[in-house]
Image (cartoon, rainbow, N blue to C red; front, side, top):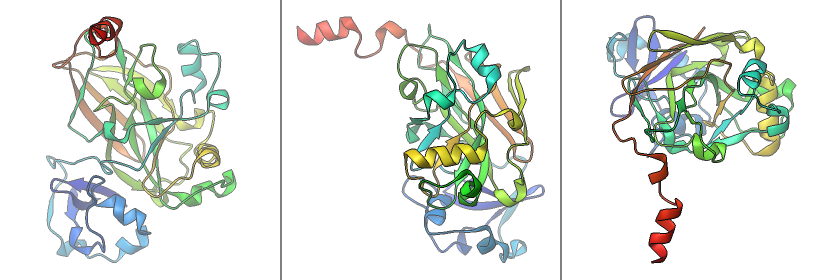
Length: 294
């Protein structure tokens, strides 16, 4: 099943070429920030609970042209894998992988949905696209084994981990507003089958920059869930970004980023540099500190 969000925080199911509004059938109301599916997941929502809905009785619109929002607008947390493909390790001249680095957190306020725009913060600092498979947690997980990890996964979606190539910590460089495009919807785990066998491609404009298969992950999906749960409790609606393959590259004003993952679909967003400023002018730089001290 494919769970999407329409304007007004309306819960929707995508079936074929149509989008059905199922909001009235949910036992929960949209959360203040997380949209309709986060509170539903938090209260134990399952695919089986939706299977009995008569879609023919629901308001419907064509998928083509439907304005979809991020499937979870503000997850409790976004856990991310820093170096989880060997080809990306080589590309970035990294000495370590996720096995040594562990995971990091991104700000949940960085999430945007399909059709929105990534806002470049700096005019003179490279900012890259990173296309990734995202895991959506369905039930609380703490210290779970890799053998049991997938039992705690509700489904999967696409995510772009946008990254400034500066000197700050990863969580800073990847947490600017708009830096986590998510979508286009959540595909339930039962439809995906094996998450470690999904083709992934990412374009910037007409340039195919990234092409891989999740079979190339260093930590598999199950291993990543298990490892993350050994560090922190994972709650329903939490997102885990599984890492990006080689092919990251600079974004530019007016670009379009398109991420396509087999079995899931296509996430497309724009890029704007309208608010970009010089890196040296960011708050906290030395001249700002001196001025503040008088």
